[in-house]
Length: 378
Image 1 (cartoon, rainbow, N blue to C red):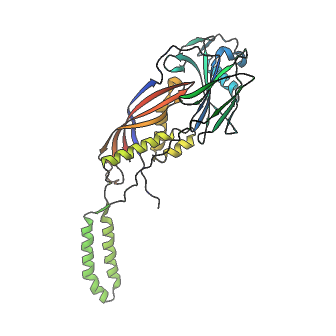
Image 2: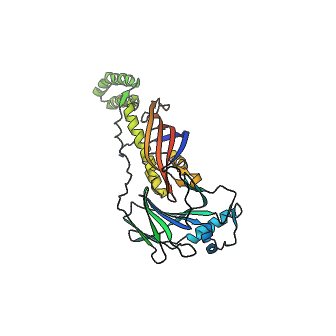
Image 3: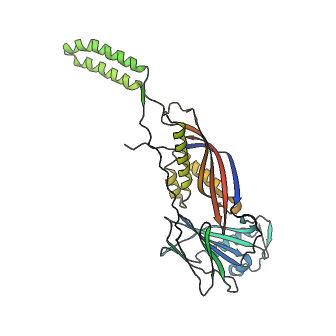
């Protein structure tokens, strides 16, 4: 028999959502963007290769040297051309093995004094001012020991390219040239691997007897009264019939008592389930996310939870970069009556929590705080 375990079913998941964003570093004057800049961002389960390029530095190389402005008429086509041109460039090895990097997103971007680079929102941008941000990504099975990159994108005049590499808040910059294009990052800081929190065991079911137990007792007494004489007369089947009736009535009257959970237990269980749900989104592969979510959520709501959490962690103004949740603060967890009274193996909690995370891309890291209010059936 499969050991029972706690499964959370979240309804009204994003009721009263409040989203706040705070920059890690204070606002400062935006520095001029280099013609070619790169970032190798390392996480426990994802590796990203990012480019920030002045459009004028690559226009000729993508056949767009005659373009004078970026607008709604040519933006999508130019972004596609840039992504295609960069695909396969700057090959990456992880622990001695070549890694295929998938194109994640391409956007024309603009500097922002607080957020670094955000998606360009002007209707028309002179080609001489245009900046493009490109992100390639690959899923990892765990923190790498070594990442090796051979840089191949340089300014038209052959000048150096500035490439930063490392983990969040621990990056180092290298100036790479065509003569010395190799960058090597070593995992000397130790990347923490998020783990699922353990949950307390589900208590054994408790039973109580309903009114039918008295009917069963009466049937048993009648069976004794009539069955003994019948037994003596050799009619053993009559005795068996009464025993069978009494046993059936006893089983029918045996009811599972509602699950009893203390407020402290509800708090611990709800917190662990929420932490484990957010942990699933540390992965890049959708299959890994679903497999991890399935340990904390069940039923048709599994897909709903995936879509709603995924959407809440996307930062549209920054090209769809995903927030990595680093901490969950369960502010309130109040037990509620179980509306499904015929389901004694669950409890209902009204929860409010804060998910604290960071979003890192194109060399900038920002803190973000998401506030949630949801009813959890566990």
